[in-house]
Amino acid sequence: MAVTSPSTATAAPPQSSPLVMRIIGAVALAHLINDLIQSVLPSIYPMLKANYGLTFTQVGLITLTFQITASLLQPWVGYYTDRHPNPLVLPVGSICTLIGVLMLSTVGSFPMILLASALIGIGSSTFHPEASRIARLASGGRFGLAQSTFQVGGNSGSAFGPLLAAAIIIPFGQGHVAWFGLFALFSVGLLYAISRWYKGHLALFKLKAGHAATHGLSKTRVIVALSVLAFLVFSKFFYMTSITSYFTFYLIERFDLSVASSQLHLFLFLGAVAAGTFFGGPIGDKIGRKAVIWFSILGAAPFTLALPYADLFWTSVLSVIIGFILASAFSAIVVYAQELVPGNVGMIAGIFFGLMFGFGGIGAALLGHLADLHGIVYVYTLCSFLPLLGILAILLPRTHR
Image (cartoon, rainbow, N blue to C red; front, side, top):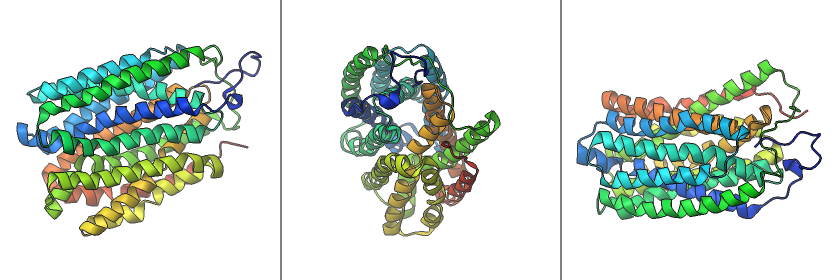
C-alpha cells in the first residue's frame, strides 16, 4: 500500500487510520484457505508418485511449475495494482484456484497435473500482493502485527492441509481432491466481501501515490539491503522447501514410517512455522525488524546442522524448533523491505512472496534431482548449512533515524 502525500489534506495516512481487526482477520482466513489448498499438492506427492510412476525430478517439476507461475506474476500484479488498484482481482484469482483444484481431482497424466498446478499458482499470484496490501491498509500503523497475522493464516493453512489430505485424499484416492473445491468456493465469496470493504476505502487511501522515504539511506544502500534480503529469503526458503516437499520421503526412508505418520510429523513442523510467524511480526514492531531477521535465519543454524544426525524423536523436536525460528523472519523481511521502498507496498509484497515461491520451486526441482542422484539423506545434510547465510544480516542498515 502506498500512503498519501503529506500535502493531501483529505486523506489520512495509514498510520493515523484505525486498526480494523475484522478485516485483518478475514484476510488471514482467506490466506489460510489459499495456503491450505496449496499444501494439498505436496501432501499427495507420495500418492501421485506411486500412481503415475514419477521420479523425484518430476515431483520437483510439479512444485516448480506451481511456484514459478506464482512467483513470476506476483511482482507484476503488485506493481500494476499499486498504480491501478482493482478490488475484483482477489475473487477472480480465487476462481483460478477453484478451477485448478477441480482439475487436479480429475486429471490422469503428468502434463495435466502440471497445468492444474499452474492454475493454482496463478490464483496465488493474484492473492498475495493484494491481500498483503489490504492487511497493511487495515493495520492502523501496526504493520508488523498486521503482516504476521496475515501470514500466520497462510502458515496455519499449510499446517492443516497435510492433515486433511491424509484424512480425505490418501485413503480414498485422487478424486477426493475435489472436496477442497468447497474451500475454494467459500474463498471466492469471502474475498468478494473483502473487496467491497477495500473498494469503499480506495477514496481514503491514495494507493497510487507514494511518499518520501524517511530512512535517509542512499539508493545504493537501499539496493544492497534489498539484495541481502533476497539472499536471506533464498536461504530460508530453500531450506523450508526441503521440509515441505521431501520431509515425508525422508521420514519414510530413514525411519520406515507410514505415509500417514510422516504427514503428522510434517504437521508438527508446519504448526511450529505458524506459531513462529505469529510472534515474529509483533516482536519486530517492538525491538526492530533487523534483530528479528538476524536471529531468525542465523539462529536456526545449530539445529539444522544437527537434524541429519538425529533419531526419530530428536528429528521431530529439532524440526519444530527449526520451523518456529525460521518462520519468524518473513513478516519482518516484508515490512522491512516496504520501509526501504515506501509507496510500493503491493510490488514489494509481490517481489518477496514471488521470491518465496520462486526459490521454493527452484529448490524443489534441484533438491529432487539431487535426491535421485545421491539419496534424500544427502539432501538434508547439504541443506543444513543454508541458515549460515544469516550472517549477511549484519549488512542491513537501520530504517529509522
